[in-house]
Length: 123
Image (cartoon, rainbow, N blue to C red; front, side, top):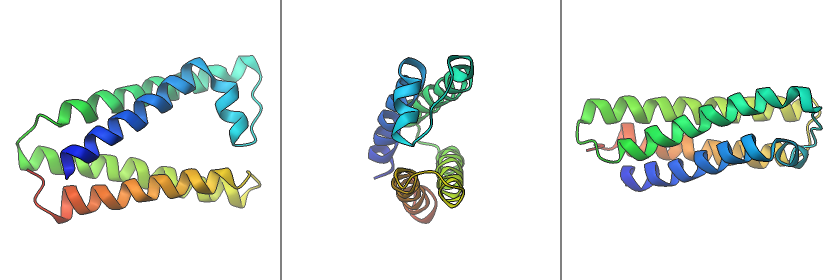
């Protein structure tokens, strides 16, 4: 199950990264955010970070080392849980409800990484 989750996570983070780099304003408008062109740099940095997570996720599918897989699963769990918490915080500070949907997706990823990477035997 972890390998499938790593694949889905890789796709999810790759798409997010590509959108952040090539369509930053359109992506942010979904959440009710309008950025001036000079602020796109932040999106570009987040985009390359997401693409790096994607590469890590796809590359991790080949690993057999249990300790390494647990560390990677915990890292992705932490990333997605933090995204969920930040999304809830953003909603409580006036962002539109789409942010809650995004937070829910990240929370689901967190639960799956906990279950398949830490609770079960990952290798």
